Amino acid sequence: MLLTFRPLAATDLLRPLSAPRKPNRFRNRYDSTLALLEEELDHLEATEALAQLVLPDLNGALRLDGALRHDARVGHPGVVLTIVTPAHGTLVYPCDAFESRHSADPPSWQINLRAIALGLEKLRRLEDYGITSRGQQYAGFRELGAVQALGSGMTRHEAAELLVSTAYAGWILPPASADALLTDRELVGDAYRAAAKEHHPDAGGDAELFARLTEARDLLLS
Image 1: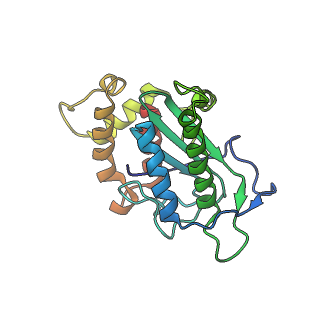
Image 2: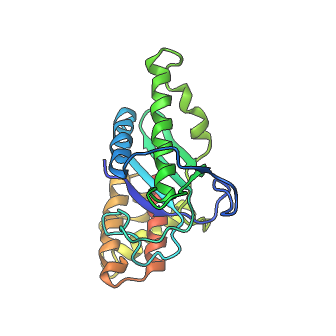
Image 3: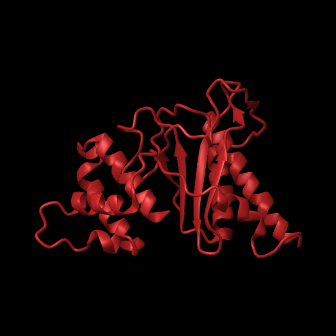
C-alpha cells in the first residue's frame, strides 16, 4: 500500500517544539521502516494510510501521488498516522517521543514513524499470543478520532461541494453531485484526482487551494 502524506496543523496530539524528547533508539533505514509498516497495514487490511506532518511550505512539499518530496521541509518532529480499516474503523496513532541527536540519524519524524510501526507490531502480537481477541487492543486508538489535516472546521457537505465545484468547474452536467460524494468513497477519489490535475502546485496551481482540496478529501474518507 502507498503511504500518502498530508499537512498537519497545530494539534494537541503533538507537543511544543521546545518539549524534551528521547534520543533516537533505532538504527534502521527508512526503507526498513516502510517495509515493517506495510506488513502491519496488510495485517489490518488497511484501505488507506495517511502520515500527517507539519509542513511549513506546502508549495512543493508533496508530489502528485501524495508522496513526500525528498527535500521537503518538516517543521515538527511529530507524526500522526491515520489508518482506515474495515474491521476496526479509523485508527489514529500520534508519536512525538523521539528526535535526532546526531547527523547520522534519520530525520526526527522518520524516527517517530518507526516507533508507530513497531507499536503496531506489538499490538498485533497481543492477538498472536492469545492475550486479546476481536481487536480490543485497537479500541483506544479509535476513540482518538480522525485527524483533520488543517483543522479549518470544514463540514462534510462543504468538503463535498468544494471537491465537486473544483473538479468539474464548467461542466454543464457534472458526473457526480456533492450528495453522492457523501456516501461513495470511489467518487471522492475521482473528484480529488480531477481537481488535483488542475490545482496541484506542480501543475501551477495554488498551494492553499490544493491544501483545502486535500483536507476535503481526507475529511470525506475519514
